Length: 112
Length: 112
Image (cartoon, rainbow over all chains, first blue to last red; front, side):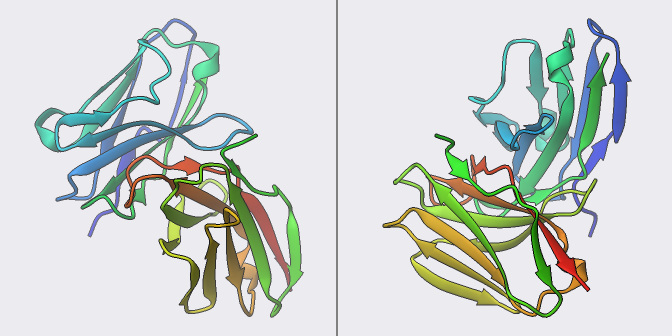
């Protein structure tokens, strides 16, 4: 069974540009989460989807971040326009119920 | 005060010894507790979850929870060099996974 897959694995963009991160959860997992880890800090929650609905987006830092999960399958996280402080590793996780979740490898975003 | 606190380490133990990793949390209403292992550049991997006071054993791993003291620990018996990784403590209020708060992690080094 395929795990949680994230694309791209690395992205380097200039300040002011737009970047879209993608997450493919494990098939059949209704719950999908986005997390972020900035340098030297702990992993922080961004938001939680149940199927295509946003269950909790309290961790989204500001309106430059937009997450979607059309059709309840894969999800995208768009940052527009990107700022220097958005650099970090973005993790996606999925779970079948509200129990233990499985993480993807993460996308390392560098904004220069 | 951080919501979830861990000693960043590194914690060095000789091969075959018991490694003890500790975590304290600030929210007395927390109900679910998780330990993740993360190798450098890899995704966090769930190794233990615990929901009630006491000990929970799984192979060489034992999770211990004391809600009165707001303390959760992970013991690794017969430590192996392959156990060398960063161990992340994660806590949430609602039963089950949903939104969790991570600690910064403790780096464990097992010396052959």
